[in-house]
Image (tube, rainbow, N blue to C red):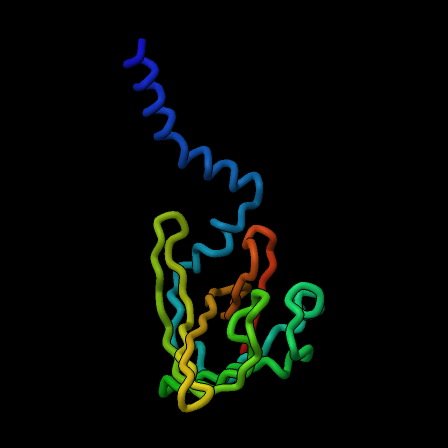
Length: 170
């Protein structure tokens, strides 16, 4: 009797990924839908050159003032300039969870790809920032295609709550 229940347990465990996928589809799980597929066209570094500003809807949703308590409340105060030589000017928060601080810094950037089993390819921009001669820190934003355009974004808190900040290129 023990071997029979043990074999049923192993068969049931093999179905867990299928059940997880079905639950996510019906529950609109953002773990698969947002973090994952970037479409068939990979993100190219050339698509990122230019000045990016915080999408006004991020602040309009109240995330900026009510939840994040960010220092600067105008989207024009949050800019990231990505240059084709790999350098950048970064004027926004180091990260958007509570505790992140606003910084203006020169630095470098690079486009990276992360491949995860459940979500596929995820692209992100990694920053190496040097606000002064003795401090060095990093930051990063995800990059995806959305409605025919490329956006940079990051979640704060639980991604399933759809709380995110989004930057768009001017």
